[in-house]
Amino acid sequence: MFSRLKTRMTYANVASTLALVVAVGGGGAAVAAAKLPANSVGSKQVINNSLNGQDIKDDRVKGADIDESTLGQVPSAANADAATTAGSANTATTANGLSAGAINNPNVFGTAALGVVRAYAWNSSASANATLTNYTYNRSGGAVNVVHNSAGDYTITFAGLNLSAGNVVVSGYGGGATWCKVNSWGSSSIGVLCFNSAGAPTDSRWTIAVTE
Image 1 (cartoon, rainbow, N blue to C red):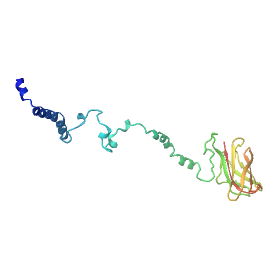
Image 2: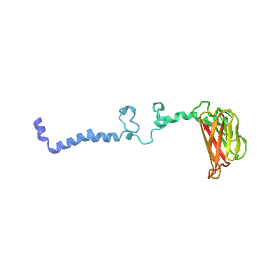
Image 3: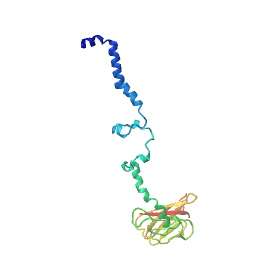
Image 4: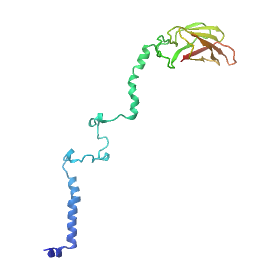
């Protein structure tokens, strides 16, 4: 029988047989896959971990399809964790009087010596003695008084505040080429001197700040 089969194995017969095998085994399978009924492929037909990012259309995975508990924190979002405590900061400081000119609560900036402002004032009267009530802060809660000793010579007192340590900064305020400096300080009083551009003592408005 093999001899008879051998006599009939022409090139055309072999080529056509191979073409049929390829069609059924490869191309035919592709055609069959293309004709799968709609919704016939589900989770059971998909091999686990076989799909890649390019297999999913952009923006097709929605929030409802994601288990948020499996997601880690975005690195830069860690800085926002403390932001929830900042919401009450403005309310708290306003309640302590920060928004109302003179600050009467000595605990507004805290009670420990941590490099915070201990006192500040704006001397708005260049040539008169005055008790300052606006734009002032005295950590002790006491009054803030300015004495005009002579031209360009002032003494400001923060009642009840110990000024034996810390730093004091004075700046001339207003128009004209005037400048001011600290003359001395101690106890609860600070001496301030102001000069014109020629270096002569002159009356001027000024601001002062006392820090730890």
